Image (tube, rainbow, N blue to C red; front, top):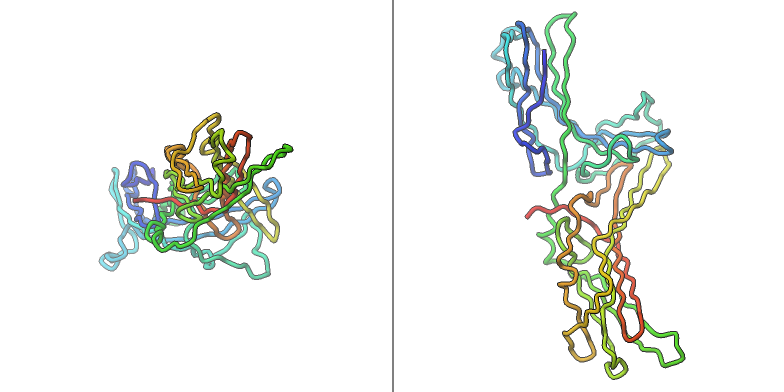
Length: 342
């Protein structure tokens, strides 16, 4: 007996809006008596600390469907077993992802250890995206498991599994118009020479607030304000520009925590020598064409928080603006990163 799980999608990537559908494929060389064929969709979040010496796992959810005999037709069968002739057979299934995690229903610690006697706190959040693997401190995994139960004491239950990839789609586009705040950071730049310092303010604004979308450019404005142009006869130039995301993953298990960080450079541009052309009074604005062609990488995992694991991002923007003398602006923001489907 050979069991396979065939999905209707060629590239099995799913979102919270999707239904996982396909067929349990059964190929048997001889006549077979079975009692049931079931398919289970489940997810788990595993945290590993201290070089995998401390491990804890939460079951995010579990959905089970009886592929054969179908639940709605089970009463039609007068016997508890069904005889399947030799050949290849396909049994359809369709299971929808839940909108939120359900780990409060069942929690287990791996390695056969009993759950701690103290109460475990669960977070009722949207399902986190697939992340990591067995070699990483965090592993968020979703998979299907098909089970064929033959009739008879000596017959062994057969199973087959298949991983599925999950990404939560954000509805941030629907609430963007209601965002009223803009992240604004100002800094004063000056000279350390004996001459009178040249003072101005460099103002950077994230137009959509603390939100970034995967695969989309950073919506940003950069202005030089309160500038006395008479004191800056040599011009104002953007000498270098860099945007970088700092990813922070917090992993917890049994009241212990580890923090893992890594950086992702979105854009680095040096020796630009770009002079802003838009001038209104004492304000100079830089053209966003310098950074609008660079998008947030799609391979990053969106911001999430679930039991024992959370991921957040900080956006760092570094500006080197030249006023005849080098002056550098540095802007860190805490932002949320979302997957988005238009």
